[in-house]
Amino acid sequence: MNIVCLDLEGVLVPEIWIAFAEASGIPELKRTTRDEPDYDKLMKWRIGILKEHGLGLKEIQATIEKIDPMPGAKEFLDELRSLTQVIIISDTFSQFATPLMKKLGWPTIFCNSLEVAPDGEITGFKMRCEKSKLTTVKALQSIGYQEGLSPVPGF
Image (cartoon, rainbow, N blue to C red):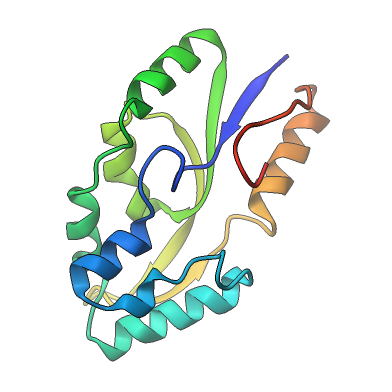
C-alpha cells in the first residue's frame, strides 16, 4: 500500500510567515526553519515579535486569505488523489491552514494548533507530536504503508 505525504509551505503554497512579514512590514518575521532549525525557539521568538507589535491571529489570517496556492498545486493534488491517498504533513497551524485547504480542495492535513487568547493574541502553540513529519511517516510505515523516495525536501 502506498500513501503520499507532502509538505505544505514552499511546496503547495507560499511560505505563510514570509507573506505576513511582507504584509506587516516586519522583515524579522521572514525568519524560517532554514534560519532557525529549532522550531520551538523560532515560534517563541515569532510570538514575541507579534506581541511587541500588537499583532494577533486576525491580522495573520487576513494575510493568509490573500495567499493563493502555487500555480498548478490544486490540479496536481486533484490528480494525485485520483491515484492514491495523500496527506499533507505541515509545521503550520490549523488556524492558518483552513483557508488554504479550502483553496486546495480540502486535502487531509496533519498540523499543529495555536493557543489564542479571547482577544486574538497568540499566546502559545501545541505541537501535534515531536518531529511530526518523521514521526508520522514512521507511523504510516508501521501500519503497512511502503517507504518510498520523495522529491519533497524534508521527507
